[in-house]
Amino acid sequence: MGARLITIPISHFCEKARWALDRAAVDYVEQPHLQLIHVFFARRAGGGMTVPVLVTDAGQVLAESSDILRWADTLVEPGRRLYPEGELGVEARSLEARLDDGFGPDGRLWMYHETLPVVADLGRWALAGVPRWERGVFRVGGPVLHWAISRHLKIDAAAADAALERIDAVFDEIAARLRDGRRFLLGERFTAADLAFSALAAPVLLPDRYGSPLPPPEAMPASPAREVQRLRAHPAGQFAQRMYATERGPTPDRRA
Image 1 (cartoon, rainbow, N blue to C red):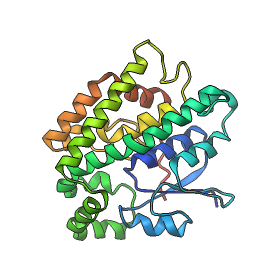
Image 2: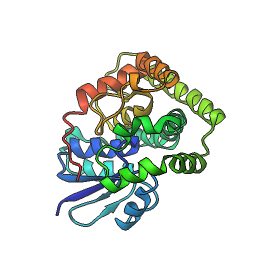
Image 3: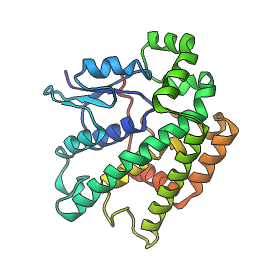
Image 4: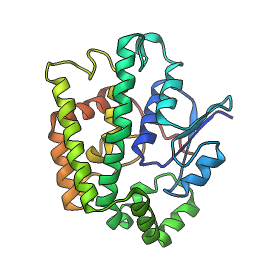
């Protein structure tokens, strides 16, 4: 049957998983779903409330993006692994975990705050690959979706402003790491830290080669579009875009 990856197509945590699976040349089918509806399919696959959920061809269920990265890494030759042996692997795991816990949720909160009020205009990207009946739910239930996501994630203007401040701080921290001219965050080798930062920066960069279509900045409202352009010009934003250009590779359409 092959592996199955249950996703929300625009989710940056799902992009983390897609990137690792594509890099390891895993044969899988992506099954994308609309926000909130995804919970039913995640649980039915053996996961919890969140995606990504990977069901391997052997029936193993992995319900965290970091677990999917570690599983995919077992299929890659040692010299290309995201978690190298020794101290470098420990550092990669540590930085990935910090980004997962703070930077990832902050980017999601900020982008939802900026786009949920105009989500109907962004359906072309938000619905990429989801089943037809879910598109119908989106068309008639957009206001309910807006309310439910905002309530669940505690989204308001103050929270979004605070999230953007923390995003700026992470960008500055990443830029400081790169100031000595190193190619990657932990030196001269691509690791899970580079993949995690680049994937989780997607809500504020809207990068090319993302594993699901993203709106260009010009399709966004003026205020978030300005922030995207500002962060794209930041040294950390330039680094993430370089990772997409040089390390992301082809992104074949694997959607069911």
